[in-house]
Amino acid sequence: MAKLIDGKMISQQIKDELKEKVAALKETGKEIGMAVIQVGNDPASSVYVGNKKKACEYIGIRSESYELPEETTQDELLSLIEKLNADEKIHGILVQLPVPKHIDEDTIIKAISPKKDVDGFHPQSVGALSIGQPGFVSCTPAGVIQLLKRTGIEIEGKECVVIGRSNIVGKPMSLLLLRENGTVTITHSKTKDLKEVCKRADILVVAIGRPKMIDASYVKEGAVVIDVGIHRDENNKLCGDVDFDSVEPIASSITPVPGGVGPMTIAMLMYNCVEAATMFD
Ligand code: NDP
Image (cartoon, rainbow, N blue to C red; front, side, top):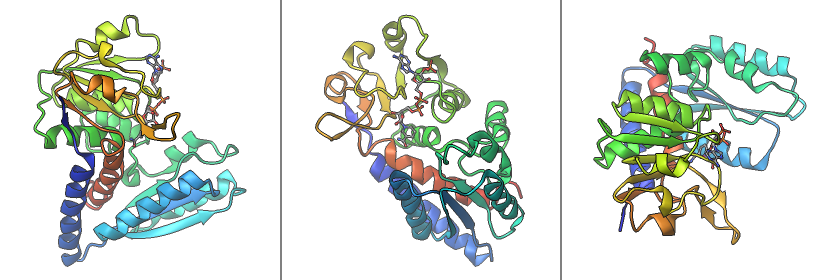
């Protein structure tokens, strides 16, 4: 039976550490400010934005909320970002994605100053990660590294296989595992013999976006399995990209869904917000 990797507990630990750090920064006269921008009122986005604001409040970060109507133009959004880029009281800028279709996501991501890019999506942040320079790291993969480290799972020298090569999960995940001296293989929809490649993994990170696709036939006995996926199954229950019941008996450690990777994303966003106050000093 696999050991469960408790993302709920670890994310709370991180938030509590950050709370102390923010209090210490306040004593030196530094208050962290975050701008949280939502365009339109997509219900799922409103939930995410609400959770981010709550986390800021818990940690002691001042958040400024911008709830813009659906018909906001790209130019209007760009001029708000420009204003916030120049605002010394704002250390991080969060634009909740997706934005409405008439706004180009890439243009918005590039408009945010890399010094305030707490989501880690700006091309400069991604480039900095790949050449080992200071910059923000995409929150979900950064959270996976924290899960591994804080449960005492060594990455150095391990065979790490990542399923998925998206810009927000798979690619930065691979770069982070490489930074930790893992031997990394990235797989995707054109990979031949996916099962065979996955079976080499000591650490298998699954970000494929397909409910319960990865069962025990993809997993080596004793592997660590990290499930990034989030879906609702046929009974409306949350599930991941991994078939938990099939994989759990043979893995050495596994993240559950919910309560694994999910809670880490916001914790690492808060980590980036706190870093934003000092990273480029
Ligand atoms: P994407 O859909 O952007 O990427 C999926 C990746 O999986 C692609 O690289 C794709 O390959 C690959 N893939 C799809 N089908 C196959 C297949 N049959 N065999 C091999 N590779 C395949 O997803 P994301 O990276 O954004 O997200 C992945 C999962 O993680 C989703 O379930 C999402 O909901 C979840 N997620 C969870 C977060 C959290 O906070 N816990 C945050 C972000 C995402 P190709 O590039 O060739 O198309």
